[in-house]
Length: 223
Image (cartoon, rainbow, N blue to C red; front, side, top):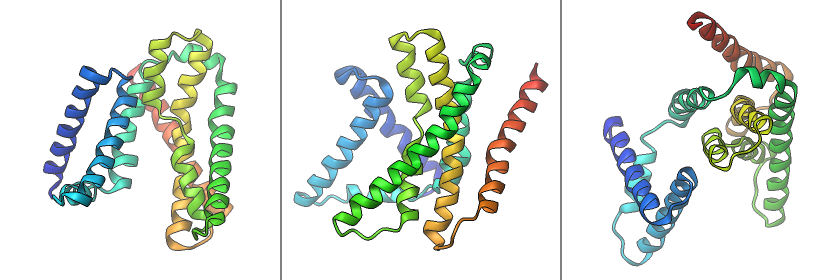
């Protein structure tokens, strides 16, 4: 399946699920879309057992048309973060910068390590063989909160402004930290190698500090 057809199919599925959510479920948009996607995929899996139609195979072909690294990490994520950052007050964020940085870096790292160790221990207890790097890779995937969902929910419940600033800033910055851990653990989990502090440091400089420098330079040129 070519890229244009795959993108068109994904947009079509998203529109249909969004319509169902807005018309019938009325959940918060991101939560409703995720819930319906999970229910639809599970329903197709069950239906395939009784009435083989090839729908699951088509979905697998659709998802395999995209490279995760190129499509999500290098494509979609930057636009999602930019969209979320446009509503953040940088004056208010400066006043909460140390708390935001602590939560984004130390909090995300702790969540990644805790989740990875918990998954490793839980799967090992059931006799499922995984490496610690693979478990930590899973932890890196889910350690960071979704900035789009967090910002959308916060806009509806009306939190106090300082607390909203902290959550806004943390939800935007933690993705860079999660990408750092994902890149490190992906290399060790897939290739079977071992991550060194030098490798982690170079990735940190390139992904986090490099991205921040480019962002500040772009913001300065606009203003």
